[in-house]
Each structure stands twice: as structure tokens, then as C-alpha cells.
Length: 93
Image (cartoon, rainbow, N blue to C red):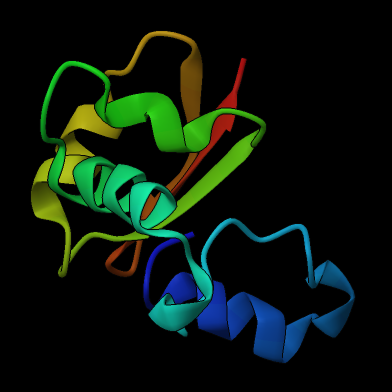
């Protein structure tokens, strides 16, 4: 999840605690983990997808991360499940 969807998912579904890959409290992350997430959000570098390891679903707010949404729409190994209302959900195939 990104900085918007992660918080919303945890608010709506508290049972997902520990299963959502992003928490808006950035201070809980080690610097390397946070940088991996930042590279994912900005699609920076050859290993920008490293933050998705261990996760089968990605939820992104496209108005905040349009380049990421664009890349996810065509990313090998992923299928877009929903792409509407300013957000995108993709699942690992």
C-alpha cells in the first residue's frame, strides 16, 4: 500500500495489522527499508520493485503516484485487479 491506502486499509480493517507493507509512521522503518519503499513509490532504479517482495497485492493512489500506476499497469508478473476512482490495485500472478 502507499501513503494513503496503507492507513485507510488499517483503519477500515484492523485485522490487517502486520500484513500491510506500509505504515504512515515513517519513523518505524529502518533507513534501508524506507529507502526501498521510496524507490518503489518513485519507480527509481533497476530494483524499484524490491519493496513488493513478500506481498501479493499492491494498492496505489494514482493521483499521488501517476508514474508508479503507469508502470504497474504493464509490470510483468502482476495483473491489475482494479483501476478506477484515482486508485489502482494489482495482484501478483
